[in-house]
Length: 123
Image (cartoon, rainbow, N blue to C red; front, side, top):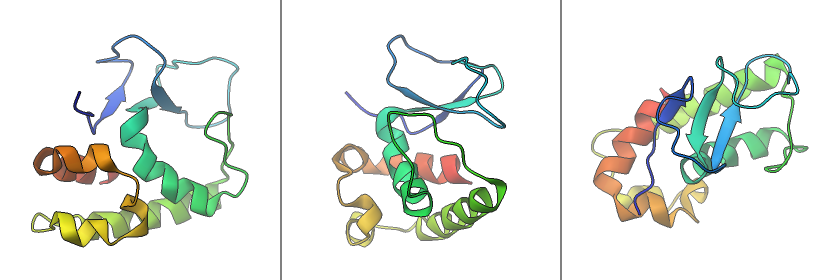
């Protein structure tokens, strides 16, 4: 099975199960699958999650984590740096050297599609 590296909005494209990560703007409303949230497949989110975890020590993959505005901007700057690394000419070897990609076998299985798709996610 190929991992889809894309953002789902308004639950469009949700394909059953609970293997999606929800990013909700604002405070948690004690409700999941919010229409103003964005969603990632769990495998695709692992790369972004590595960046989040580096900035938010209390981050827990299995819990709701509030992130303040200042930290969100730090994460956005980190994602901007990731975009610059994901140039159209980037190679597998280039990315495999980066710690963020150490355990990303699903990403490299279909690299020709995954790299540009990840670039679109973080743009």
